[in-house]
Image (cartoon, rainbow, N blue to C red; front, side, top):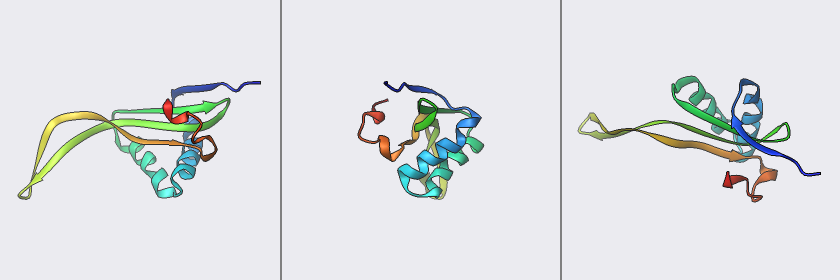
Length: 102
């Protein structure tokens, strides 16, 4: 029996699974907290989960990024906004099995 892997937008019920995946992938709760901060503070965010049946096994988030340059105690904005790949992670047991190809 093969298992179905799906990629979809994150929903509120995914948050505990996303936290678990990030803690496993990065080995520390603080890194998982970055995702919580992005959810709370970014107006434009695209948050995707990779699910294997009903378990969250991977995660990727894109958020707006402003590139700034600090010059002589002033800040200059360069070029506007871009999309950044903020966090990409997968559960340890799924690494090296093609999951990061999504």
